[in-house]
Amino acid sequence: MLLKLSIKNYILIQDVEIDFSTGFSVITGETGAGKSILLGALGLILGQRADSSILLDKSKKCIIEGSFVIKGYNLEDFFRINELDFDELILLRREINQGGKSRAFINDTPVNLTFLKDLGDRLVNVHSQNSIITLNDSNFQLAVLDSYAGIQAKVTAYRSGYFNFSELKKQLADLKTSALKAVGERDYYQFLLDELIKSNLRSGELQEVEERLEFLRHAGEIKKSLFNAHQIFSETDVNVLTQLSEAIHALNGIVKFNSELKNIVERLKTNYIDIKDISGELSVIEDQVNIDPDELATLSQRLDLLYRLLNKHQKSTIEELITLQHDIENKVFDIFNLEERIHTLTDEISRSESELFEKAKAISSERQKIVLKFEKELINKLLQLGISTARFKVELTADDGLLKDGIDKVKLLFSANKGIELSELSAIASGGEMSRLMLSVKSMISQKNLLPTIFFDEIDNGVSGEIAGKVGNILKQMGEKMQVIAITHLPQIAGKGNHHYWVYKSEKNQITNTFIKQLSLQDRVEEIAKMLSNEIVTEAAFQTAKELLNN
View 1 (cartoon, rainbow, N blue to C red):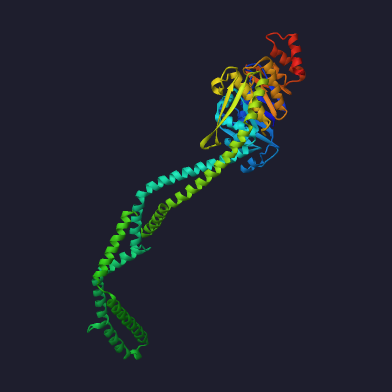
View 2 (tube, rainbow, N blue to C red; view 1 turned 60 degrees about the vertical axis):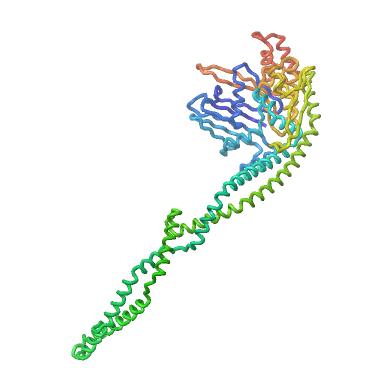
């Protein structure tokens, strides 16, 4: 329920604060005073879009705040799902700055506009002349029946399953498209994979092959150099080892004459041993070096293969080729598993479709049960509103396939006059009849809804006199179950309100501002008397105003 609405710097409103109460409240005022401005401001905290054009003072931001009591309206899960703390009293705030940028808050926590609108739809139902058009919309008509039958939760659960079902069908279509495309790709990727697997790639292999090939290509030169070195050290007639041995022998004969020579002889002996070892190792290595044309050819072919694969796949390392091989393996695996996935998904869709049909049939049965009661109650409402020869019929037909709200298609057929066949609302109902139809519908479903507040903007369109009083009675009855606020031009409706607000304009320093105040009983008599009069308010108008208020 709306407790308070605060409006600052919005169109013609500089600063206004309004306290609202339970029951039926009316808002009146001269044409152009700004009654609909209030509704526009309320719309901002309910999630409607806005821009900087709504600023009264372009140097300041616009701030709209609304306090709501939300206890008892089953909104706890909504807050929990959206990760917000639930409180029985909440404050919605909307700010629009000079650049048109908007910010929204719930209890000072920033929220996006979508969330604000979702919450707003659960707090206030706004009925305007534009909303009457929705009565012609089949989705709205079906929603009315579901609300009257009290099966919104079942329909919501079905709709969730339906959207999941639709997503599964989309996935299946995508898989089948992929499968058709994969027929051509499968052989290509399999060829690439077979080639890479057959190549038996190893990490680091390229460097190994390149180094080994370089060695083999110079094997003759290497073997010759090793042989020559070994010969110099120990195999020729005048070799290094023989000469070192002779030098050691010569110095041994004179070491006793010079102590330093002893150290030199020891060093020569060490060198002799090292060179002898080196000579032996060179001989061994030289024996191991073989000129192998077959290995050279094999490695050359291997290197050519590696280079070809690198160029073909535009890679620079064997490691990248190995990674590519794994990627292609995954693609081939996915392609070969498409049929299995299509089969699995087809089974899942079939099960989902069967379950949805069962739910849809149950929902359809619930709708059918209340059709006659709904028709009868609506006709009675229309009789109260002066359409004495009204006939009304709900036509439900089952579709062969699943729809987003079940299997039913609905048509609301109406005739206001005898001798006129029942036809769809859009083809036969006048503006005044549509307005009374919508009021009747909303009064019926308001008794079953958990919606806290409904706001009517000129529900009195196309009605007057006695019928206006009956419209007021229905609004007053609705106010016994929920908070009802109505903008009206008719004194018969204004007199039915539990609370009365007056919107007026005032000009100061050549600036026009809109204000609103709650009227006392005496103020209400005067305002309703003015609504009953032309230019001069007569005593008779005052008496009639008092009678309207007493009734």
